Structures are given as C-alpha cells and as structure tokens.
Image 1 (tube, rainbow, N blue to C red):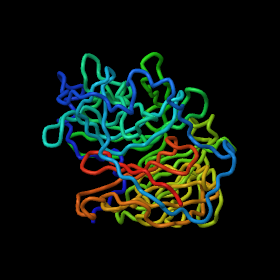
Image 2: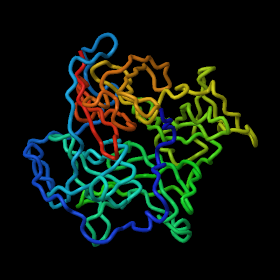
Image 3: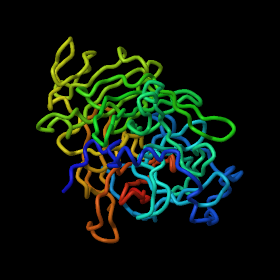
Image 4: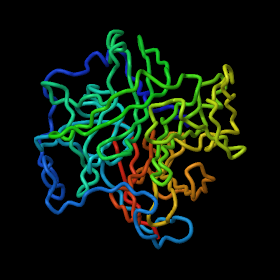
Length: 414
C-alpha cells in the first residue's frame, strides 16, 4: 500500500504543467442547471440557515453517550462545482477542508484541474469554493483567474517568489480556514519549491484570510514566505483547530523528512494565542511523552537553542493520521477527529478527546471510502469531517479524495 504522508502540496505535476496557470479560454464543457435543492448560486435562498462552526459551550450539552458508532451512512456522488453565473463546469480537485468565514462555508482544496478525467488541465495548485448549506456536495467557485473561467490559486507567490518563477516553480498547500474574529481567518500552508519538477518543502507558513464584498471571494495575505523550516514539523499540513475558550489555535503537522522517514510518518502539535498567530515566538510545542508544552522549537538537530524532535513527542503515531482537522462535537460534548490513516486505501475513522492535545481515543471505522468496489478502486486519502453542515453534531459530513474527485458520506450517530 502507498504511504501518503506529506500528500498535501505533493500533487505530482511538473513545472511545465504549472506554466499554464491562468489557462487560456473557457473549458466549460458541462453546461447544466444547479441542483434544485441548492437554490441560486449567486445568493442563498431566504430560508437557508447560516453556517456555524461548532465551539465548546456554544450550544446546550448534547445527548450523545458512549463511543461514536454509525447508525446510518448515506453515501453521496462526487462533489459538483458551479460557475458564479450558476452553470456547472468541469473541475477536478483533491483534498477538501472547510471552515466558516463571514457567515459562509469556505472549502479549501489542493490541485485543481479544469476539464474531465483524461482531458484536464491544471489551473491552480490550491483553490477555494463557497459551500452550500442546502446542498453540501455542491459549491460555487467565486475565485477565477482574470478574463478566464478557470479556477484561481488561493495562496499566491510573494513578490520574491514571483520574480523567481512564480507558479511555474512554487506551490502551496493550505488546510482549513479558522475564523478568529468576524471576517478574519487564519490558515496554515506549506511552501514548496519545484524547479524542473524536483520538489522540496521549504517550510510551513501562516496566512490571514478575509472575504471580499461583493463577490464572496476569500483572499489570503501571507506572512512572508514561511515561518518554520524544512527541518521542523510541517505545522498545519494535517489540519488545525481553534478553541475559543482559551483563545488558542492548535496546528497539527507531520514531522520533517529524514533518511528513515520515521518522523514524517508521525504527527506533532503546536499552539498559539489566536491573536498572535503570525508571531513565531509566541508558539508552544507539545511533548506528548511528558504531557507538557515547551517554548523551544522542535528540530531534527536540536541545535541553536531548539529541542531535538523525537518520535515520542508525536500526538499521533506511525501512519495513524493523514490529513484532517479536529472539531467540537455538540452531540458528544467532546473534540472529534473524522479522519483516515496515511495508507492509500484507508476508510473513514473516528477519534475523540476531551482536549485538543489528547489523549485521543480510537473508535474504529465508521464509513467506507470505496463503498461500490469493496476497497479496490484506487488511492483514497484526506478523509475529514465538516461539522458546520449540522452544528447539532447528530450527523456529520465526511469527505475524501479518490482519483482527483471529492466524494462524501453523511454519518448519523447512534
């Protein structure tokens, strides 16, 4: 089976592919009407509920008892995307995280291609869509390249990177957007350099995000190229969570690449006061073996005042976690992780914890990522949950990637 650690940002396209970025012309080959339950894609129906991303204490305690078990699983067809004018267009993508910003669901994706399987052109290394509370497996692409119907990159090169080749040699992988104040979001990403198709992670960074009005376009502003280096964990490349009670952001990242790859198959944790997310000196790092936080940065060498990164510091062990962000379950009154492992044929699993640093309790598989073919259909990864579609927590939407398409299921808990 294929190991998928560090899949985020590693999408296997050459630098020559990226030179097509904004793309030429209209690749809309699928003019269809939006689904009838989705309403208008330019404005939501008047009775559409506003999305709420759950937080502890936000709702009365839920009735969930015992370990989470699936009572029913309803599988969905692959996700569909729509042009701002309302017609469907052919888009293929991977990953698929969500957050709520300015009262709107924002999906963040990895590689984004226009066209269809076997006849698609990459137009963005990462992108966004605006979700639909009334139709969770559809979204509208509000961010397009100028004078084109092709989807635009979300995280863009710095001026220095642009002068060094821009999107022909650089790419970025962002996870979920967390809103820490009205219309003020934070996102973690990897900065990746790929000259001549040779890929190297430069490190992890943080960007702020705001929603433009009108237009509903999420716009990111980077805090320099990166904040951490390639000999530190890739903070946020797994996912991140915001706990409004203590005002901290928690960022989960795979370890750095080493000769034996033992660190990169494990997941580490840091946290920061949300209003200081751009200050690398404000972060604390979790030592899981001693159950304590340290201000020392964790590096492969432990040099220059840092602390040597050890396998025992990991919050999730060998191959246990691919990419997913924890969220608060109002049903179970605990933090929940709907996720997959780092193996390419993982199904949807669930873990819970009373605190974001754990200890996390595993509850096993709750849904299949290949319900039709019994586990034989290709590589499947980035299983993650989307609690804003049902803030009660009685159900949760889970999605995953298969063959550059995003699929999903709604899980109803016992």
